[in-house]
Length: 374
Image (cartoon, rainbow, N blue to C red; front, side, top):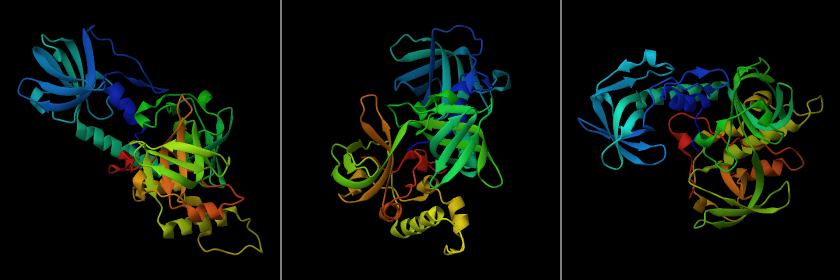
């Protein structure tokens, strides 16, 4: 499943729109001369006199700049047109992001541009990689246990993490009927509730028990775990009996769902680690070399990006799975993340808290694109 950090999404929206970024992740529109049309999109092709773009509304437009048109390139992280560089049309390439202002052309699906603001695809990729690495290095995720004042308590397996927020913390909230990260909207602390999935990026304490949040992404997701009862690849659905509620549920699997498989050896190792973490320490408790470090580092959500992908057709009745699902406005469930091969984990977790998955896979190199779907 694609996953992009909030800062990148804002840069694509705010920087390309030449709007300054301010605390609280809100955009103040730059004062510009009113235009008949404003279009934002991705460049598909370039000729000597025009560019073809696919807008964010999935409309293909041919954009022809006037002789006096300004073509400006923003550097990564720029939030002000004063820092933009004037470039020729020939510097634009397929994959670049643009914001076009002008008037409708003489023919349908054409625009005569008075200004084109550009962000290079290579710059976007570099920034994305940098922010993804920061999420991997300083991020973690789990299930919200409680919210009190500016403090959020998050459960990560058997551990509890205290998240401290500040006025500068950036919040982003998943849409209730979408599994796409790019559909997430600016959110607030008030929207976060017990049971939500939450991912946080920030400065961790030395003991790992607290984190001061730079950025929080949350959503109302449901954790499911159990054995697959039926698989319908054509319809893109599976049914399973959830171990927690004892109810049989149907879950849709889409092209945006991230399907992964946990190899048997890794599943057994994680099951042992989870069992060690849930066992009270003391003179009578067996000593497991390295157990404390595994408890600190083993996080299923962080393992996902390194696990092999699979398709819904690869699943079979009886397979044990763990799922994070979003509930649509009609009440149906759509898989955000599905992990199979978890039989040892579910068996070991009987009578204990089952480890949970985060809906977000933070990874460089394209794994955000998801692991399967239909």
